[in-house]
Amino acid sequence: MTIKIRFFEDGDEKGLAKLLNECFKKDYYPYVKFNEKYVKEKAEDKTNKIFVAVDKKKIIGSVRVKIFDLDLAEIRQISVTKKYRGKGIGSKLMKSAISYLKRKKIRKVVARAKATDKIGMKFLIDNNFVPESFMKEHFRKKVDIIEFALFLR
Image (cartoon, rainbow, N blue to C red; front, side, top):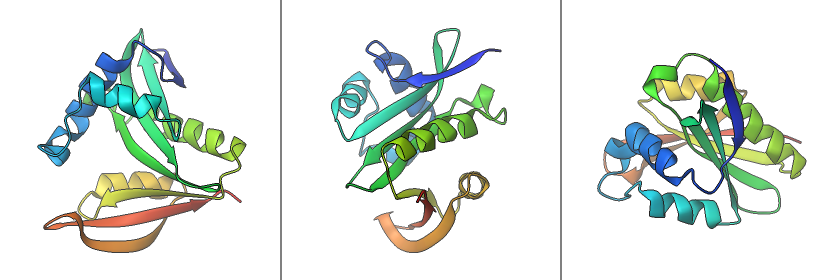
C-alpha cells in the first residue's frame, strides 16, 4: 500500500464526492448533497484548500481547510474510507493540512466534533488539539458540538 497525500486536482470530484457520502451523508442529509457540484464549489473557493489521500489513483481520504481570517482557519470534513481507517492516513492528512497552515502564517486552527463522537475527539486530541468550547444543539436539535483549537504560533 503506497498512500500519497496531495492537493485536490481537477478530475477528483467524483472520487471525493463518493468518499464524503460514505463518511458524512447520514450526518448532513438532507441539508447537503455531496455530489460533484458540491465538491467543485468547495475546490473553487479560494478560502478552501483540499488535501486528498490517494492509493493507486483512488481517493481514500481527504481533509478540507478553510481560512477565515488573516490568522484563523478551520479543519473541515476529515475523512478516511472504512477500509483504510486505523492506518494513520487521517493523521497524515492532518499533518499536511497543519504544515500548509503554518506556511500561511495561521495562528489558530479550530475543528469540531459531535460530543458523542469519541473516536473523532480522540483523533483531534491525538493531533494536539485541545477542547475549547461546548456548543449545545449548535447545528441540529439534539446534537451537541465540541470545538477544539490548536495554536500554531
